[in-house]
Image (tube, rainbow, N blue to C red):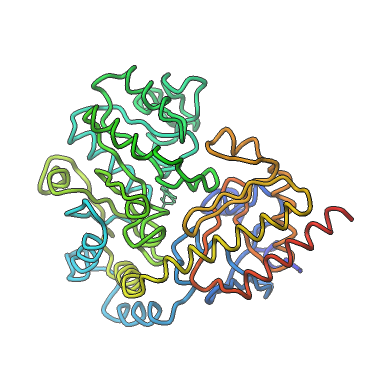
Length: 430
Ligand SMILES: *Cc1c(COP(=O)(O)O)cnc(C)c1O
């Protein structure tokens, strides 16, 4: 495959945009090489500027659960555009999508729309702090909740110690209010609670971790977390930016049958447009401005084009609940078959899969937390990534990322992925 035009465009982009990209992972820093510039997408496929075609396992990092340019969504957005792009006033659409989400998800009465997952999580912790009148939050090493200051905290040596900022620009003052625990390790959470009695406003978690590669919660972990939060009068925040309207219509909450206090959304709920949201029961949401004292606002929040894309996507999901079983089964099939292929070749691998999310960790038999994810053979992943890319399969460009399966990935795409993976093994041993 030739990437002439991508290479030229990347050189040009680097002159005007830091690192040539508007979000770091797109720069291929982890896997090496030149990022591919896309020009269009349809169904399960991406088309790049050099006219190479790829099976897409990123799906815009999750939003395109129905596949790209779904005809019904495309038509709805096209029609909506004719009415104007943005008014800065309320519209009927906002109530419609709010109603649909609230009816689909347990434990929430009200929802506020924002423009990204980052905004949703940032606002959710402000609300949690306002509601509980406590300052500290607990997050898990390797979980990502957007790039706001409070979440950019590095894993310290002790889970119960003060966090250190891992990005210049995050102040020590902010960092010390974010405490770290280890994913899938309830004792680490207990220790943080014990050392900070009466100070924890909330625990925020990805109920299926997706930002250190896919790591499902161990049996009982989320239940115990729920219990700990209740005992300590702290709120449990499920960051369902990835899992919302993906794991099930009711998200990870429905998948695991657990109810959180605040839920954050993004990705799928915008159907490919920049949308985020956070939701909770009435008692909590009434703390939010203009009803309550916790301030939160947005010039383009609830934008009609974005709302139309989201509403149409969510309605399609709601009217075809089979879709969740379908894509979850497809993902399971892909994970199982891939694992068999590697196993037969004597390649040590752990493939984590949960709902329609999965990650291949080479060189490991198990990956349950960030530390274990970082011990995987990322060099091997990088080779695998480039081999598949060369053969028309687009994986997330990092071994710490999750593959997202869309409803357009069918047997033919799975078969091709397995075939190329077999060839990768022959190529390795050549
Ligand atoms: C993507 C993501 C975010 C951030 O959303 P943006 O829209 O990129 O700001 C937050 N939390 C989780 C779990 C995510 O996957």
